[in-house]
Length: 118
Image 1 (tube, rainbow, N blue to C red):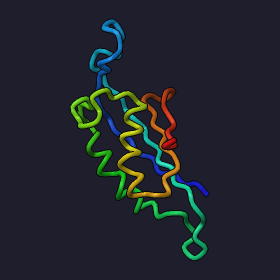
Image 2: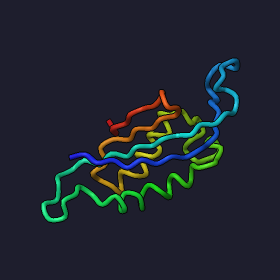
Image 3: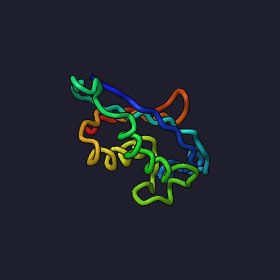
Image 4: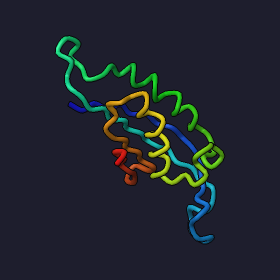
C-alpha cells in the first residue's frame, strides 16, 4: 500500500545555467507543493503503513529549511531546478524513511517532477 503526505513551501530561485534571456535566469518565486509517498505493507495490528506524524517529523524540518529562502544560497542547491530540489529532498528523507517510494514536487499547479530515486 502507498500513503502520502503533502507539504507546501514558498521559495525564490534563479537558474544560473539557462541562457541570459531565459525568464528563469531572473530571480523569481514559487509556491511549491511536495507530496512524499511511502510504500509498504499494511500493519495488521495498527492498520497503517506508517504513522503520518512520524513522516511529518522527518519532512517538516527540511521544508522549514526551504521555506521563504533563496534556494540558490542553500548547500547543494546552487542550480535549484525542480528536479534537483526533488533529489535534494530524497537524499535527506530516504535515510530516515526507508519505505520512501517517490517524491512529487510541483513548482506550479501544472508543472512538476516525480522522483523515485532511480
